[in-house]
Image (cartoon, rainbow, N blue to C red):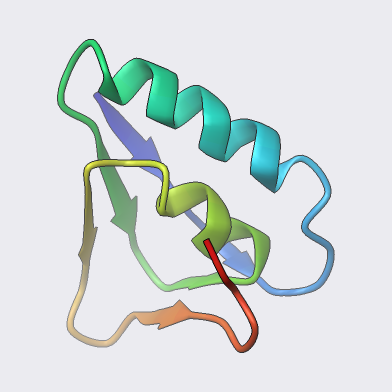
Length: 68
């Protein structure tokens, strides 16, 4: 299962729920979060729920203060 993770930062509303759902799905089948540009803040939290994160070489992935 592929999930597209895109976000420039800001609020994390809903990101934890998406993370939880991706973890539930990952228990049943392989999951990959794909970043095509930027996955910061909430998008990064959600992407962490996948088994793997794949990003282009020029993508920005991560966030200050994300602890999982």
